[in-house]
Length: 364
Image (cartoon, rainbow, N blue to C red; front, side, top):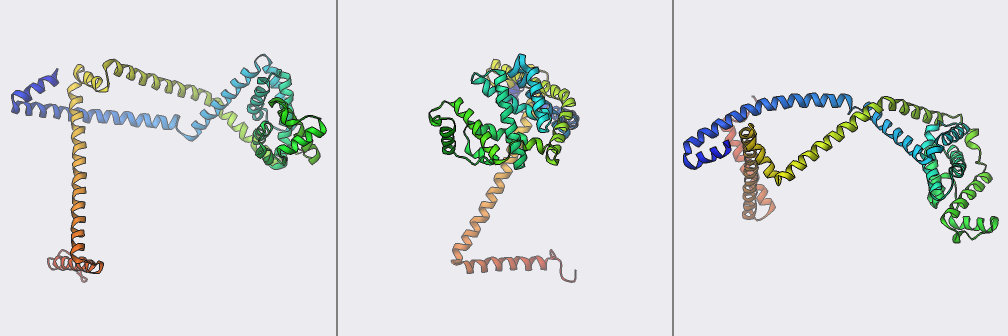
């Protein structure tokens, strides 16, 4: 209501309106100063808390590690369900055979098993295929100096049909080579087979290729090496970070959800008010801080206009200088004459400044 009273005074009594505006503006500046200090203090506290708890590199590493391991565990349990304990035993045995920590195999063990089970294989059949696939990937990794995680991904892509992924593992064979091998050794037309049959034949071909190349079993023979030991150490460190990270992850999820809910509350209020302008107007009229908010908003607008006007004056001045220079250039007619005019003008101005004592002399 104070805003309408102020508008009435502007229409009826200009001097009274000026006094009212000065009063409101003065109160607003005083309140804005107090609010500014309070918000500045709160911002510093919040910034310090966030920097110390959530935003530091170590804390972020903890949160990411916890999120990653929780996601991996949920995926593993959802894929294997009642067979989760059996699958864990199979994975642990496989990891021991190739000298890796079991957790390093979990993501690809889960994803590859899901792919085979999605094509109708039982959990045990899928784990048999994944075990063979992982053993070959580990052998190739040890031979080529790759991590088992990277080799597993490349092996999975090669089985799906990526020739390039096979080359990265040392499987230097093209589609025609596989088709010829399948016709000779299995008596089938590779190109006429379904997707699942082609994947199985590609696995068989990889085993045949690595056996002839002397790669099979290389991971078990070379399990004690510095590269894999470092990879195991990195995994163990991330697993340790995930323990306190689980608590921090829950805090961060709660904070993000609370912020999302607050924003949705604001969206709902704006929609109910009929738009952002209407919403802000209602706040300004219906709350005791309405006049202060209006005055602060006015000050902000004045500052914006002043800044824009200053920029405009600078641009105008620059334009005048450019026009003057262009005029001088046009009058001079040539670049040489133009340069001479500029130099002569500068020299004249410098002499005048020196005569008036505006410039230091050599003795000074």
